[in-house]
Image (cartoon, rainbow, N blue to C red; front, side, top):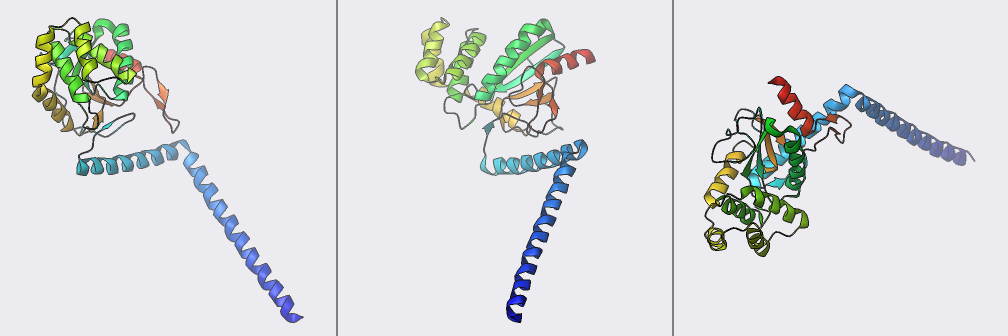
Amino acid sequence: MKKNINAFRSVHMRNAVRLLIGFCALLVIGAIALWASLPGKRLGLFSWTDKKSITQEQKKNSAEGNEAGLAGPVAVNSVLKVRSIDSSDHIMGNIGAPVQFIIYEDFQCPFCAQLYDTVEQAKAEFGSDLVVAIRHFPLASHEQALPAALAAECAGAQDKFDGMYNKLFALNKAGNINSETLRAAGKELKLDETAYAACLTKEQYKDKILAQKEEVKKLGVGGTPAGFLNEEYIPGALPSQDFIHPDGTPGLGLRTMIKNKLQKK
């Protein structure tokens, strides 16, 4: 009889210990959650994890030569400066505008198409106060990015860069960039078809396109779209209006950022 009582007590004690351990674990988890919910601690935590993931991703990209279309922020070398707008750029607006937005594009990148819409809104709203310069960053993962960039340059040789720029993003959104649609776009813009076809076949502006890609990669940028607003790096598909980050912190849209730049002038 004593053996049965002892066995009962032993099992009871083991169960009690298990319950106590589980209760303590819940208390620890709750304390951590409460600590992380405090504004200062939460931001610090997200900042640390973001920086850690960025560093790891940059090392991976550097080792593997990876590039990517970007929806969100990445780090960039703050010591180096982006090349200023000059006559070699495709410029939309007055080159002397107080706010200058340089964008390294991939015409097949879906995030570039999102930023395209944002930039069109900004151009319409800010007029002569904003100049946009388009440069190239065709990602290796996008088969039609380089042909599309070539099409833009070949159209630019006939003073139709802006028209091709618009058509390429229309094709991007339709998921329909290929050799046939690129040639059709040239025809719709009433380009000299023989000269345009020869330009595409010879890849006449390939060196220029790849040189622009390399210059932005040297800044530490590994994805598109890569924007520079008065030299400030603006990564990813920035929306027009202010927004909320996934961690609940506020973010400035392009509209507010341009207004802030204008106020400092």
